[in-house]
Image 1 (cartoon, rainbow, N blue to C red):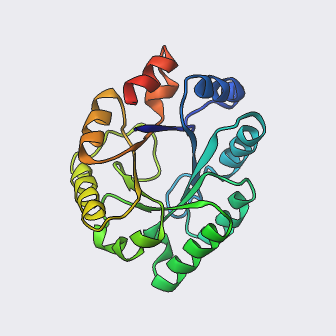
Image 2 (spheres, rainbow, N blue to C red; image 1 turned 180 degrees about the vertical axis):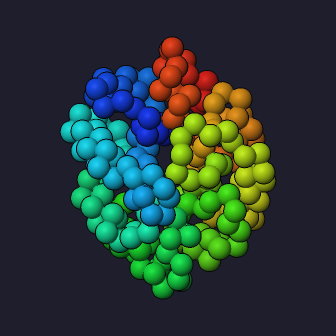
Length: 218
């Protein structure tokens, strides 16, 4: 079954609490928290996302799907693990070494949190294959990380297909999440390629009917 993770990156502060409530009522599965440090990507959302995550943790029963687009993974990992997220995802491009990557995976799992590794459009899938047996999810970026409102890069779905084939051939139990440019039309393409968790931001936030928008993705 397809799940929907709502990116709250473009939610206005004045309307945030109401929007979080509306998204939950519309039957999303997770709140997607895009943590950007202004270094790994140009934008800095650290303050806003922490405020939003804290608010959600107090008013919602839905899990946090935390996506760390940061260089200092360990610092932000510790900060967000205190909120007991459903899943915490970091970028393979940020960790750089095998030892560091494995240590981060183990620390997240020791906290009882599911682990995700994210891969950017220009990064080869081979970079994450050594870790697939140790994690719960792969987040395939279908746009360049760091900006909202981009169009899905069609070639990234080839990476989803390759990943899905590898998972099936090796008998792995891993979710595939896609993030970037997801709407009713691209959701179908992503699902056909093998994704089962869809991150959607603008498509949901600007929808006239949130429930219908969520259902159109599912």
